[in-house]
Image (cartoon, rainbow, N blue to C red; front, side, top):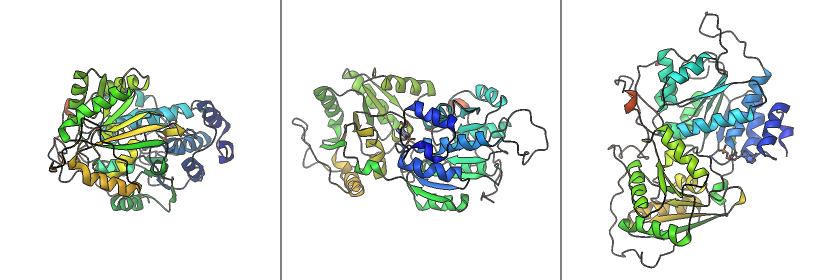
Length: 447
Ligand code: AMP
């Protein structure tokens, strides 16, 4: 099946061909016609399935086919600039940047404009860009609401809404922000919801948002990816760092993506690897946008040997055919293991996924093996034999004392509408945040 049978315009097909895609992925095969039909969509798809093109291509088609000349739903003011017609919400800055890059690339032969809005960078340049008129806006929820509050963004003419990685957004505590944003959109619109997992919370949210959606699910190819050699290295808790250094040096691993559970853990590991003369940098929500972008660029071009990341920061990183992924600590959520190792062995390339597992994590390992329905081979490295009498200790999850509720130590806190706004310098999280007064408390349904 080729892209040309899906009903996309010649201008979009040209960009797709130039990008080097020959065939649509399974999610694209299903999503593109569904979005083109104008109805709502509920899609189960993870990063790596081609989901981004699955929604950006048909959105570009729809918006370039039909001129956005509907009258403003909520304003009688004549408008000078072109209104925002599509809004794509993402949980993280990285994902927002990546999605918008796709919009620009796939849309290079159509006359539509796009931009990102996210926190951690100045507001003014965003305000200036907005003034020029934008067709497609890719945003993280918190900063978007900052703009709403300042009156620098108008969402009253959105025709298509996309919630990308909706499960992550709920996990990160963005539900209130999203509901406030939904309340500002025209009731009549097309809604597309993409989520890797379907908890009862996501299901309830989807049913409140979507109107008779087409439901599609990408096969979980990561679960069956046999191009990834997975291995567990049992090791004592306090020997992990030495083992990691040993493995990297022994096997001459390069371009290694290492996952830690916390931001603090990521920083500590980078410090230790640096002491071991291994070139490494960390990306997580406490890093400035510039630092993250720099680290990612170095990692992509091969000049950085090791990139240490937390799960949330790593979402949305588009790195293909990564040779090595290391779980320095196992994730608390078994699905995250699948996400993590999905970074490697893509597109038929062989990759290696190594997990350093101490006695505290045996339960997490069992959960992962249950999810992927296969036992993972163990290899004990001579000199790093774990103490058979070691007692498990509770896993330290993070620095914010939110472990009881949060599955993810580095997620953004949910906001209370009454909270005092923080200075921008204090607004650092995986996404972006800062409390604001409620824009609307109206619960949002579609119609
Ligand atoms: P995504 O799941 O949207 O993050 O996409 C994962 C990766 O697949 C990205 O590097 C895309 O550039 C790539 N990709 C998307 N669609 C296709 C396609 N039809 N053929 C080959 N690669 C693709």
